[in-house]
Length: 169
Figure 1 (cartoon, rainbow, N blue to C red):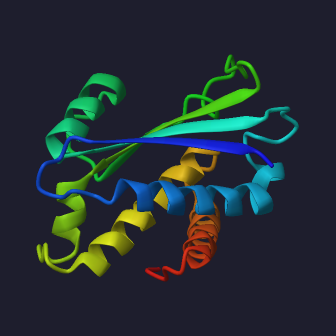
Figure 2 (figure 1 turned 90 degrees about the vertical axis):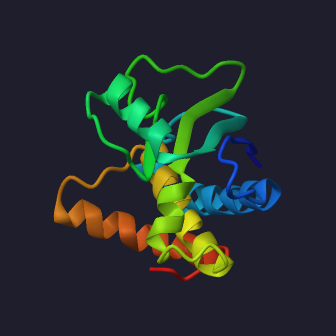
């Protein structure tokens, strides 16, 4: 069994995300993706004993800063992924570990998306895990530049979310 290391940091003061729950559910979704999509992902034909990824919870000013500084796009985003393993042809496996990269989520955008009702934690969490499932797909090398790719990504996200008992989409 592959060891999965997930590190989280929350610099958004208005929502104290249950990071333990996020780590556990993210691990479950990643395990679903590995079990079902490994041959189609950046993990195919790789030998590794562990996988590492980071999740940063922040606000949209931080995602705008990252977009501007690293992607030459000056606007805030709800999610940005830095898929350092999938997107770099020179990526490497160090001591058996694959560092997939980082998912950055603007929690204020999550809150805005659920009708600005901060007390509606179920919808906030569903939206949060929808974004995490999407970020995981990008970290594994999946994109959605065509309608066919988009439909594939959404279909797999739906299955991953069902694996943690969420059915947002």
